[in-house]
Image (cartoon, rainbow, N blue to C red; front, side, top):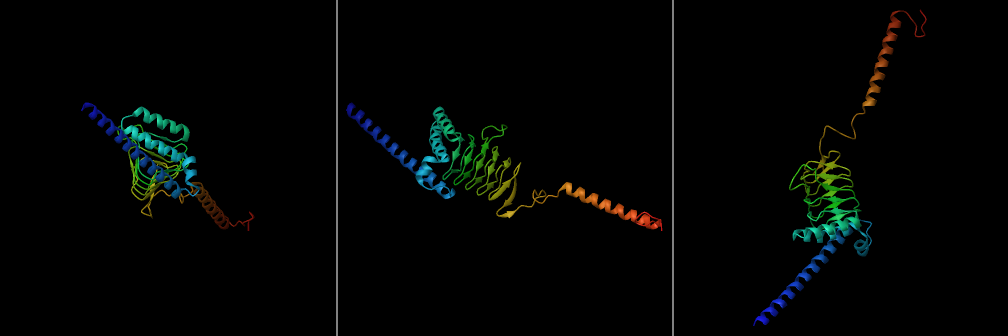
Length: 249
């Protein structure tokens, strides 16, 4: 009876292992398909699924993160970090295993991208090269940004601290975001400020395009002063009976 029970447990364990492997294979296949679909949708340079799967560093980094994140959730911290560092070495993209990333995530080009441990990224988000989702060094616990669904972060942009970028928003290239960004907004500059929300331009006292040129203003003021002085000199000459050529009448 004891042998039969042990044999039954062994068979049950093997079957459960087989089911776990099958689930892992299905999940991995689905994630690969999602990654390929995200690239095809957002990168016009992509020519084939084989090219994307074999040659796109962003896809490699994302798939490595999926595995590292699963290990991290199961408290296999060393193995998770080892995988993330290996991926960083080969792709130039550093994603901490603790970061939470949604579906259809796309990293275009990817070199220099850094995503911190407590960062959260929604579905259908896009990051370009040189993006940092980092901390400021002043926070504990939740230290990194949260991106809503359908957020785009331009190349070289830095989003720092436990702030939230609302769904559908865009962060311009090289912007430095230090404060929350509302949904469906566009943020630009250093530090970043919202210039458009829900398709409508936001009024702002500082207009970087049409701001007056202080040098030109000074030149205009000097020209006006010189013109005024000339008029006064001519008037004095007329009052004293002196021709414009300097001779007395």
